[in-house]
Image (cartoon, rainbow, N blue to C red; front, side, top):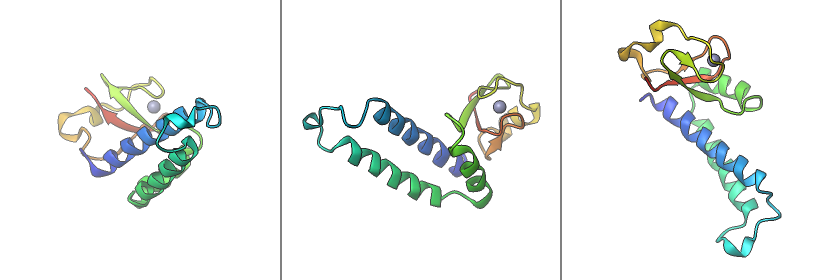
Length: 118
Ligand SMILES: [Zn+2]
């Protein structure tokens, strides 16, 4: 898999974890049950996200910065030639075995990053 795509997927996981922390209510969690405070956990996630963002190439990073505020999920799977961000067909040229996940693809319709599941 393309290294940039791996970074994007890792960032997406971290963002989902951070959202989960926020949705559970940072202040309401029983903090004595945890080794670190939820606020500290969220701060560490932000730190890690910053590190990962620094490793993105120029054009990928530029697109990430446009996506990160607006989209729930910025990396979505392509299944059977369909983008699972917007549920539109993606060009068949991208769905060939040779090109799968060997470069960072972007959906023409919704602009999300794509990874191919089959
Ligand atoms: Zn799409």
